[in-house]
Length: 269
Image 1 (cartoon, rainbow, N blue to C red):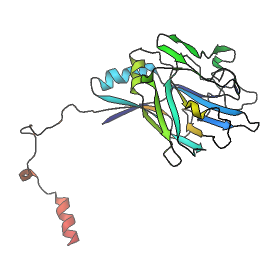
Image 2 (cartoon, one colour; image 1 turned 90 degrees about the vertical axis):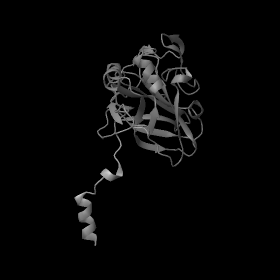
Image 3 (cartoon, rainbow, N blue to C red; image 1 turned 135 degrees about the vertical axis):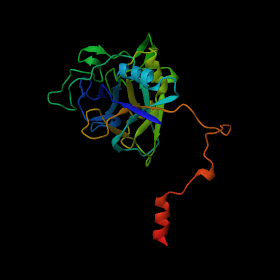
Image 4 (cartoon, rainbow, N blue to C red; image 1 turned 90 degrees about the horizontal axis):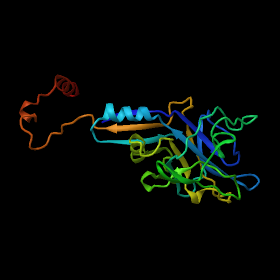
């Protein structure tokens, strides 16, 4: 089995409580729904993008015509409040966005990249939450009672939706097959604006302090050995021996015991 990994070109978290704040250089990515001190739910979703040219090169020049799969992997840094089964959704983004140079709660807040309200920078590229483009129809969601419009967007096709369920004591790392989406980027069926990772709709903007799922994952800017990646996996051989093969299977009469094995047996006597 051959494995080849590529790492993100950009990533950032979007926080509903800070609609123009950019977090593009944070070492942590977050998907959560928190109960604020004033009773206002604070939802976080994150964006992550990989280079199209790298994807095309791997499929064309490394994998070729072999069978393969593609996994999105993200390693957990911290998880809280997972007291019931919670689902994360991994979907393809439908709009271009910028990484930016901000950190969470910079003072003053940095607004030069993607945020809850804007895809490019503060005042530019408001997230479009309904429509269609060359890749198909897309949507978005927010709760007008608790946040401004925004929170990213994603294609609605079920072909691209990937979910991951987590329980109280389950492993919180993300490792899911995203082959359908990556193949769509490869074939230009949809433009590659990366993934958005978010809680399922029923777990967001929940006005209940007993339901506060928080997932924090390492970003590409981590100083650990656990950055997120796309992992391509394929068989690096083309021939499999079968029972009908002749002249290629070693018979037991040709197998000789190694001198190391004889020495070990002698020493154990």
